[in-house]
Image 1 (cartoon, one colour):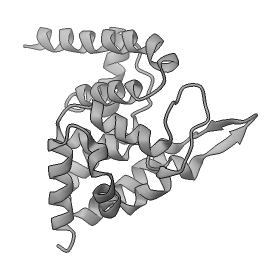
Image 2: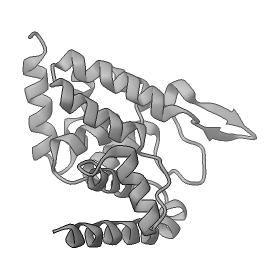
Image 3: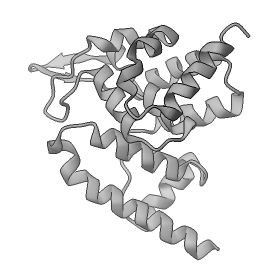
Image 4: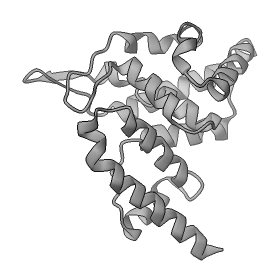
Length: 191
């Protein structure tokens, strides 16, 4: 496995770095597919960072779990390929699927296990899914990604949201917190 050393180095960076930006050059060396994100601006009121810096902020804000860190690192890798501009506002419709495809290729190249890759890609594919803060909404998420990945998706969405502008996260964060509480209550009932 020629990329196993890169995988191990990336794993170490992701689960031990408090500020992922300190490892920027090494991450771009290991995953050159991210280079295109460095200069990809996001001219829209909901964003305050370019794509790469938004990704770095998301990685910094997600829990210290390798699967979550990788999902955060690759969740928007497809944005530059989907960028369109309408009335001077950028749009990235469909970037979730493109990010999932690129992430799959990157993770395979680095030699991650098939089941692990599948889980990371599910999180990436659904990272922008609108979760309704109701029992029905949380059940929809569980049906969509599975019970094991539902709390991971909630964590990824929280980190991603906090890497946006306050205009974006302030109205949505309370709804996401409510969905997390509903999920926790549902799991306590199952015990």
